[in-house]
Structure formats: C-alpha cells, structure tokens
Length: 611
Figure 1 (cartoon, rainbow, N blue to C red):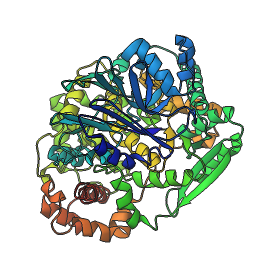
Figure 2 (cartoon, rainbow, N blue to C red):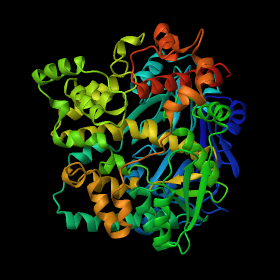
Figure 3 (cartoon, rainbow, N blue to C red):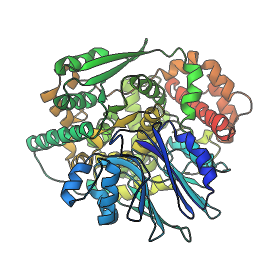
Figure 4 (cartoon, rainbow, N blue to C red):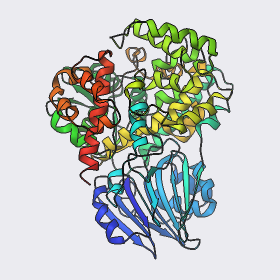
C-alpha cells in the first residue's frame, strides 16, 4: 500500500515538495523518476517483497507507480508464463500489462490505483479498481496535469477555486461522484481509466468495469449450490489476502456476521490470528459477541476500549485528513480503531462491501417487495399527499418512522426516492438550501439508466449504492482512517470473483421476508455461533444526537454562529433555528444537518483557507 503522485509539464521541485504530504501512506521508502515532461513519484508502505518491491518500477520502456495490492499476482505469473526476478506484485502487473494492455485488468483480483508511462508511445495511463478501494485525483489545466492519491497533496500544488456545485452536492446528497470541492480537480471514477497523450495533453476516459453489466447477467442456481460456491470463493479470497503479505495480517472482529466470517476463514490459514474488537465507553459495545467468535476459533483477541474524551480536539484533525467536506460521522471511530490496531500490526482484514453486494441494509427490504423507482404517477401523487400531512417522527428506530419513510418513498420520483432512502440529510428541506436546482446530473442520469433496465427494485438501489455511496463514502472513509495511520485494510468481500458472483444472485438469496443478507446468514450458520447469525446490521454508530446537544455543542456553535461559509449554501435563519433547536426538524435529522455543516466549515477553514 502506497501513495502515488505524478505530473505532466510541472516542475519536479514542486512535486518533490508535495511528496511528504503522502508520507503517512508510505513511510518506509520514497522513489521518483523524471522524464522530459513527465514525473512519477511514490511513497511506499512495505508489505510485499520488502527488499525488491521498490517503486517506480521500470521495465522495457514502461514505468509504473502502483497504490494497492494485486492478490493473485503469483497465479497470474504462472498462467501467463511471466518471467519475474522479484516477488513484487508491481513486477507481475507491469509485465502482464505489457503482454495484454488494458485487458489485463479483468484478470486482476486486487485493489489499486496506478499510473503507467509508456516512453515509446509517450502516453500515460491512469486507472482504478472495480469498487474504488484506492483513490485517485487529478487536475488538467493551463497545459499541465497532475494526479495523486490524496486531495490535500494535489491541492497543495496550485491555487484552486471552490467548486460550489460540489459543495451543494455534498449537503444535498452526502456524496459527490467524480467532482471535488476544488475547481478543476476531479476524482477518477471506480472501474475507470484515463489515457493521456503527454505530447498534446489530450485526455480520453473510459470504463473498464461496470457493476450494472454484471447485474444484467443473472445466473440461476439453487441455494445449496450458491452456498457451496460462496463458501469456496470467500475461503479463497481470504486466503490470498493473507498469503500476499510479508507482514502479519490480522482482522477486525465486530459482533456481526461479515467480520465473523472473515475471521472464521482466516483462522483456517493462520495458526494464531490476531483479532481486534472495539468498544466505545458508555456507548456501542459488541465485544461479548466478538468474543464468541474469537473463542470458537482460538484467535489472539484484543479488545480496544476507546473513550471520546479528546473528541473536540481530535475532530478537526481527523476530518481535515479527507481534504474535502466529509460528513459520515463513523469516520471518527474508524480512525480511532485503526490508530489503536496499528500498535499491533500493519495489515488488517475487514468486512467492507458485504452489505452493498449481499443486501445487508434494512432500507433494502421494502425495495425487495416493491420497485419504488418505477411507481406510477398516480401512486406517487397519493402517497405524496399522505406523507405531507403525517407528523414528523422523532425516533429514528421506531416503527412509526419506518412507516413514515415508506410513505415518503412511494410519493417521490426515482432520484428523490433514492436520496430519501439512503442519505436523508436535507431531504424534505430542500427549500432551506440556497441552491434548489439538481446539482448532481451524473447521479440522476445513472438512476435513469438503471431504472430503464430490467432490474428489480432491490437490484436498482443496490446497483446505485455500489456506484456512488460505497466508493464515495464507505471506502474513502476506511482508506483515510487506515492510511492516515500507515495501515492497510483489505476487503475479501470485494474480490473480483465475489463481486461477479454476488451480482448474479437471485434477489431471494439477499432479502428473504424481513431477513437481510440471507445467504450470508445461511453461510454463517455453518461457521459462526448461533447468537451471531441473528444479529441485525450495525456499523460504527456514534451518539450524534448527544454530541450535538451536549459534548460538541460549544464547538458546533463556534463553527456555525455568526458569519459562516455554510450560509452560502443553507439559509442563515435556518442554521440559526437549528442551533437554537427551533426548527421543525426531527432531533436525529437536526443532529445530522449540524454535523454535515460543521464538517464543511472544518474543510473550509482548515484545508481550503490554510493552503
């Protein structure tokens, strides 16, 4: 795992000065290669081939800088008869690329963002993995191009204005696709590539992998066969993520089935697997459930207790690391967990992606019953009127809230139906935003494309989640949380084979009645204690309402009182009413609104103004 930085027609001194901003991603080594007008720089976190795995890696007119891991690279060497002199996956990849070009990406099981410069063709290729595990940002203006693993590094290279549409997207949708808060800086989309002619700076974009393609290729299997295939695929995915490391690999172990299954399969391959469970003082605690799995498999278990006593002083530091407004409050415990686990090891397995591809969220259940995206206009009009007269629910987990949300969903068009079921921050309060037009045409266009397909309602929402929310929220959260602590997180559920298998499954193997993630729960019956199998989905939940009303009340008021950047996007009187708790908003929703605006202020003051 590493950090990459590169430039075209940019002074090498500028790039060398920016490289230390990536040192946390690669504290073990730094390397760079400079050509006539092309610069490639790399910071290394040594995990595979500690001695000979240095980068940039040059071979036969090609130069590679890679951030990530190619887990099946030994298998690919044998399959393609690649003659390699090191144990580095970078060597495997560059030789496979020389042989097959972009087609080689389809054979790779891994997480990656990379750049390859072809000295003969004078072309530069940038690409990202299927799910978007590894980030890649770039800008191209004034005859110059640069790219990097992190926004803070890239934005330090020049002066960039604010992309106001992106900020509006952030507040409205909570994720922002390929745009960033900086004008002229973009993120390469997951499963995408970009080629650059380094002579005339001509750019071409393309998709090399799309989740929608695989949802449209269903395979009929019975449950027994599907379980056997999943068992074998998950075992293999975990196994290669353990073996493709010269360092010890551990596992995050919560009280859920995702991390429990990862631990079960990892324990087959490691005699004394180190596992880590976190408990937050006075709050969310699954340590007893995690101990059941640890005891069953004899892991070397570590219970990490985390207090939020330093919360007000840590929040600015943690959120600033994203280089953009980032409103997912679980970023805070994710950072703390990674920081503590780093004291024991450098590589950790996690359960990321299982919910998005196997149907793990409760909000998926109604979409398995009914395709809300394709509701007739008469039905939408009826439920729109019903929800408009119902009182607001105050408790997030109540049955009334669930029924209220269903009524809302049925009364909305496809875009707003998705937003209401997913992010629900300013949903229903759009008139309190300064910019009322739809700021995210890409999302709307993708939803329209998905809605025009023959997919079911469940497949539609899961497909959109995979395309946007997974790479733009959950995966970037874990990438920053781990890499800020010089740690690598590996996600077996996001392997190539499991992704393509899961998208081909029948809906009834994902949601059955009210049961989420049905096939994983059936698999868990074979490998995990019964108490784990029946547990509902939980994440790193934080007491956001309590934070806004007590723990962080002074901090929120300091950031959002008086003249603020947020009032350029949210009406000032509404911000004032939220702070004084006078707005007619459910308490949980109020807390979320305040948190997202505070995160915006932190980015503006600590990242943008301090450049």
